[in-house]
Image (cartoon, rainbow, N blue to C red; front, side, top):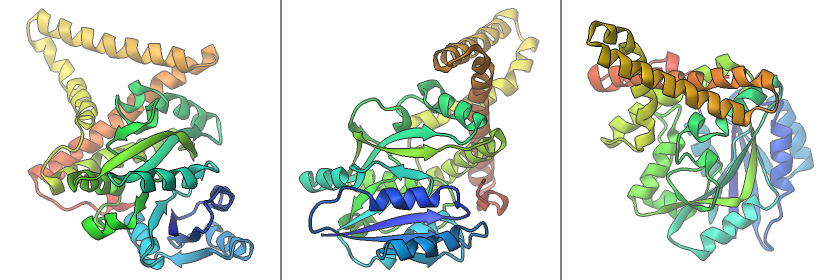
Length: 338
């Protein structure tokens, strides 16, 4: 049995050693041949040099150059570098797999042919206080949306997962990652999996540590791009891939329209005011529940609208760009936030 592990990376010198170490410290089934391809997008922070050092420690690790630097190209380069294998595991450079992640994913895929994709529980980690606050906010249904795989509490079928493993038959059936998609290429791919009749399994018993954004500016840019590129995926498939994606843009539209409710009878402005109070109350409730000390309540509270407004604004820009004006993605939004 052969497994290809693909690590897309660019300027991840802080995390790449721990990521690679975790993969090679995995508990693997007997007879498994594992090749690991770190696909580097011309890093200039020492990542490439560190990968070359790690190659002397792990002979099965290979560095592949991604001259186009974008994530979907990295996915496909890594997959093709491994050739025709039995399974493919994608691992983000900031994702640190639990020792049983690969082994249990293989068990699930080999025991149920209806499952075409497996992923585990995401455990948010941080490198500074801002990252810790962001992590606390993202660990809630209010922050990330009901049904989001990040906050699922039990194993079961879902619409997407992170650091997924696929059997090779999936690529034979639906092709590879869409290289037009700078963001949301995994959502697009997993939507195609479900359309083709496959199922995606979230396994609570396996986990990966994820280093969240360390600053609010980076978080804003990240979620703005998520919203923007989600509309491009929707245009591609001529459908809304999940209903929860509509909530942030609806919230932003509501905020934009609130001042105009003052021009209408008091009942209308009163309802708008109650909705704002409800949102604020929910944000306070979850901020208090997530906080470990009083001083954290306000920062967590503020993080919620950053998540929601950034995604919503990106989504609305996507609607204007892709659906109204029928444009192609802008070069600005092709640059990943860091």
